[in-house]
Length: 249
Image 1: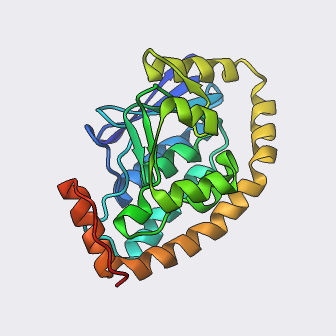
Image 2: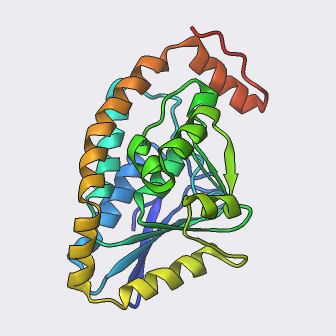
């Protein structure tokens, strides 16, 4: 356990929990802790699947970009890519919102469990920014190219029920999302462990390769937009909960 990430094992399922509530914004340090915790589970023979969850109101409200630089973004995405290289199937329990980079974190998992009032949002264009965390690959991977473009261009929020219809989440529960995620992860853990690792590696081989390439392109695009007036306006409008006024500069 670190200050912000804990791990416990329930049977053959590991529960990795983020402790930066209520919003669980991530930065380079937190993402590194998450990746390290998940990768460490590959060394445990008793763990067959993983639940990724967080305390607080929201699963993850995105990246903390207040002091972001080109170098820090690239370092952050090295940790993000490490998550994609983990060998155990991951189920994300999404309460509240998964916004921006938080959506990227949720989509790094194999499956997502949500409530009807959960929200999935790729809000990058609404803050004058570019998507990251491999969303250029993972979002169309799960919802298709046309729907992915709609979500990225509009930045609209998708509630749990619609998210299930689109493929953004795999189960919707009226109860506790962590319990539902644990149920799915336990079902997965009932399969042969060597088979799970082999099947997952095969099924995600192309995804991981494409994410690796996309992260570099996303980092370049994000770096180019960091100093723009539209990005400053988008962040300011988001904090003030008002509509942004973009000028294309």
